[in-house]
Length: 224
Image (cartoon, rainbow, N blue to C red):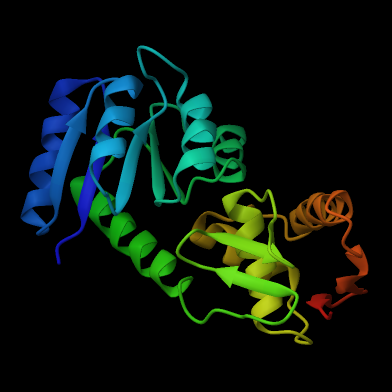
């Protein structure tokens, strides 16, 4: 089945050019010009990916991304006229799967869409299920003893990677790739911040945060 893409872009000319490029790549597309319209479409239709413009007329794109991540788990590529590293990192930390600055070529956009779809599809397999831990890849959710953990998409990917290969020591670079793909931060020690945040959420859920083990100079592993 051809991927079905939602384009949230208030500049009609850009949206229509993107729509044409998607059709040439054998994708189907629907255009929304406001966040409110996009919310309506998302409630009615299942999409495979969202192209999200940062500069929307009714809400900031980053705020809409946070809203989307609380309600949906479809992949998101952010589109923006700003290509600052701080904006890219913010978008990725909020749960975006990729980030593309304007102007961009249709070929690059299609290549990134295909890469994100391939990457997100790989996150669906395999799933780990034990007496205490359940990985629900369809809902992008990890549960501990039936309790869903309040994870961002990036944290879900991080914990899932560790959980599904218990005992394996992952390097910082490997974990950043699991979280962000090719758009990972350049400093591998950035993962330390994400590990701390994940451990805090485990403690808040009354889970021993030592299930995530630090291997100094090597990386991190999971052991329950």
